[in-house]
Length: 502
Image (cartoon, rainbow, N blue to C red):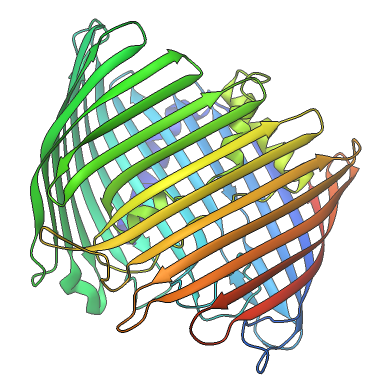
C-alpha cells in the first residue's frame, strides 16, 4: 500500500502543471434503494430467509479533459442495512478511476487507474448480481496501477517503453491472495511513412508476487513477438506473427513455454466494418483468432473468438463482459462525434433510463493458477427512436496448464455458456421501461462427476424522471439455479429506488 500511495502522490505532483488547463465536470449523486428478498442467502427452500434491505449509495463522477491531461473517476459505495438477518451495516466500495498526463510533449507520460468491485468467488457457490445477498461466495476485489512510459512517433519508427506497477487486493480470500505485479512492456513498430508493408516487435515481462501462504505460487510471464502486415488491395491485408511464450507458476509446476506462429487475413472494406481471421500454432497446440465488427447509424454488431493464457487478477482488468456503456458509446457515435461529449451523453442516458451496466458474462473463478481461456462471443446493439436493444451470447472454456499440457479437468477449470437480452423502451419523455433476461450454464469438473448449474435471471423495472436531476424506479428481479447435484434455489426481489443528482 505504501508504494501505491507514493505512486498516487507522484501522479498528482507531476500532473499539476497541466491540471489547470483541463475542463472539469464534477457530478455528485445520492441514491436510496429499498429491497425485499424472499431468499436473502440464496439457499434451498428448507433454510431460506426473507428480509428487507435498505441501501444508500452516495456517488461522485469526475471527468477532466485538457490538452495534456485526461482523468475519469466514478465512485459509488453501497451502504447496506438489513432489517433482520444481520446487525452490522455493510459497506461495499465500488468505483473506477483512470488518468493519463503528458509530462513532456509527445514523449513522457504517466498513467494510473483503479478498479474496485464485488465478484462471485466460484461458480460452485451461489451466484448473484446484487450485494444484498448473503452467500459467502462474494468478495471485494481492488486493483490499482501506476504506469510511466515514454513514446516516440517518428515517420520511420515508433517506439514505446512502459513500466507498470499493479497492486491487487481481494478481501483476504484464500482462493486469491493479495499480490503485487511488476511489468515491463517494450514495443518497436514501423512509422506512418510505411503504408503497404508494416512491422512490429514487442516484449512483455511480468512478475506476480503473492502474499501469505500463496507465496509459493509466484508467477513469471515473458512473451516476445514479431509481426508483419502486407496490403494486397486497399481493403485486404495479409498478416503474420511469430514469437516465444514463457509462463511459470511456483516451483513445482513445470513451465509452459514454446514457439508459436500464426498467419491471417484482415479485411476492412470501410471504417465501419472489419473482419480479421488468423490461425497457427502455439506451445499448447493449434491456435485460432477471429474478430468481426460492423456498425451502421443505428446498430452495432460484433463477434469474435480468442485464446489467451491469463490469470484471475488480469481478467479483472479486462473482464469478459458486454458493457452497456461501451455499446451505447458506439451507437451514439454518429450523434456525438466528440468522445468527451459522447461519454457524458452515455452516462446521462444510463442514469436517466436505469439501464443495467452490463449483460451476462462468465464467472472469473478465483485462483492463483495460470489458465488457458478460449472464448467465443457475439453481441448486437440496436438504437431506435424510442427503443434500445442489447443482446449477447458467449462460450468460454477455461483449462489448466502444466508444462505443454492443457488440462480440461484441472481444478478451477470451467465451461460456461450464456446469453442475455436487455430491452429499453422510452414510453414517454419521462417514463422508461426496462426488461431483461439471461441464461447461463456452468459446467465444473469434479472428481467423479461434473457439476452442471443452470442459472436463469429475469428483470422488469419502470423508471420515472420527476425532475431533470431526480429519478425514481420500481422494479422486480428473479433468479433460479437448477443444478444436477444437490439442491437449487430461487429468489424474488421487489425494489424501489430514488436517485438525486446535484
